[in-house]
Image (cartoon, rainbow, N blue to C red):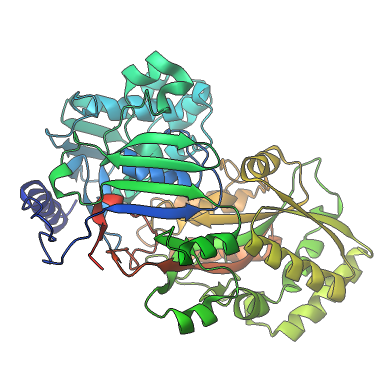
Length: 538
């Protein structure tokens, strides 16, 4: 860590620890009059996968986990690192050993101190194949020493390159230099877990009556597929500066129903339904919010050995990609600030330049003509394809639009199949699909968080695409001072092999009540923390 970064983190830590106590009825910094009721209620599309830091695998679940648990570092409103449990870190000269200094006032909700050993336990648990975490592969993304052999069951988890020097000193050893390693520690899978609670209750340790947390909030109610409530954790080290008392997540599967309930005052935040941004911006200009996000929307092909034979021909995959008019989808179907995607990695990614892959430079008319030519070459007349997506009006609209493009331009017969979230994840993970919707939001702000998904060993490479050249380029990029040429080449290769079809790069599209303050719209990762939000008096 450079001295400036270290000093900045330390200064932030001091400011957080010594900040003024909340003045009665006013914000301690801005002086704004605060609402008497500090409750934030928002909508989620689906039931989350888990609130176990080592098992959660979806965006909405990770949002909850960031409230219940705290990792080494958090992010500020711009996405910069700020102290969490860690106050600072140092590295050796070649950046293969990272040493984190932890705060001594962090506590679990049962009063126990949060220690370096709690991180060691959590990281070993994540890498342990017996945990069966969908995010196990993240240990290799982070480059932790011995992660691969531990994950494969060839080494005991105790051999993982992480150890507690003492209660407030955590040492991490990497396989190779990784300059951006600290950025990876904001991911929920790296958050600490209380060994005593996990061992006492097993899978039930995350139930409200059993859970032990170290974040700003604790879990007080969970009705699956309906609601989840978290309330302030009085044992949190910065509880004195937390303003929101309660956060409520409501599961509402229908975008239009969610908007109706927002308009009725039941929600403080919800997503803008596809195609409705222009009219809502006109009617509610102070409540519509649109901003770029570090996310990509795509379709994936099943390239497993037992997958559809026709889709193993890359000419067919290219044709299906070329025939999608992305401008129609973003401008006519979505209408919410999204951008057409021809690469997997979005332009919002830090220190990444989007390459001009070949088909991105063609007109749509030329892409359509090339698509028809490729299908003819492949002899793929009257192709039948099943496209699966998780239940959502927005996903449905896109799927209908794409199926019409494929039918009209290429004569492809498309069967659409929507599935509820957990079934959909199982379908993709088990490879019982032909073409499936995909969406990926960066786990950290660096291009590898996207491109690692096309690495052959990735836990989220649900296409099972494998390219030795891609694997080699990505491995070399991790230790390069300038990985852009590698990333450019990987994007070029996957634009040719087309294991996935990039469709658009996300924009955040929210309706947010004007009395809810400090939503971090400048943070493209959208790692938000309820402790940083507050509501002003109307």
